[in-house]
View (cartoon, helix red, strand yellow):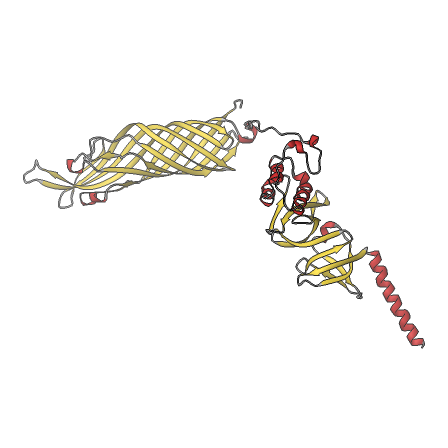
Length: 437
């Protein structure tokens, strides 16, 4: 008898210890629903909002063992007037508090952030449409885009959101009004400003201007609006011509060249700049062909290598678009003057070099070289120095000709021409002027 009494007293003490521990830890009655759909009744430990997002501590009814559950194990739980569901956020599962329930539901996700030496609880908000399984985050900066697709079947509410009558601050009103409309069987209606708001008096509405003031150019942020620039490129030229010419003339690249100039830059917008200036460049080719000298008796045949360089002076006009410090753009270059110089190596039929001339101003292939009109595309990167007054832009550029370098003077080749393309790698130095924007 004594032994039974001792055991009973011990069990009562243990039970009272558990109950006291549970009471001290703020445990309240709750219901959990597992991912398998099973319901579990017991006591849940109430904690800070952000801790609820990650896990819950729970005592099942009739058990003195504390259990921890994660959002991967529990689909839903409820205590007092609070309801939480498991949802995927940024690739991970969390518990989110359901603020409003209906066909359109509003959820709150709590998380911890640090500001200096202090930490605080912050919140993110999500909206879910049950009938379409749509799920999206709402924020001050991005409210209309995620909301409008979910309420597009309710034109009156869509207009309120689209006209900014409802904003992020009224997210609860949007959800409540949509759910009330669905409860009424989705009656058709239209809306005017005079009709007022679902939760706010019509007088609180302040119409926003339809047009925005043009954004002023900020020279402190983007640098000087006007500048002078000095582009410098190394070029590699390659040629294109009809394949039929290979039987009489074989033409290849003649290697590297130059492209230098000076011009002005004007920023029409913070990310859009216009460029124009004068520049000097060249295009080079190497042609190999047979030449006949009918003045000799008997007529002689010679192997001729013509290493030609055409020097140009002209203008360029381009536009650049900048994303952060990445620069992409394009434009046109054209020449109004050109000069030809060639080096010749002439061999007789036995292979001996009989002539080796340099800087000859005439070509055996043509009587005239065309001025050029080329289309350019380029991309590069911008480095800003000295408070953005100096900008250096390493750039790669591709130049595509619209006109031939020349047409052959031989009557039998009159319809054929040679085109010169350029691959260019260089740098542009841009010096800004301090002018008022």
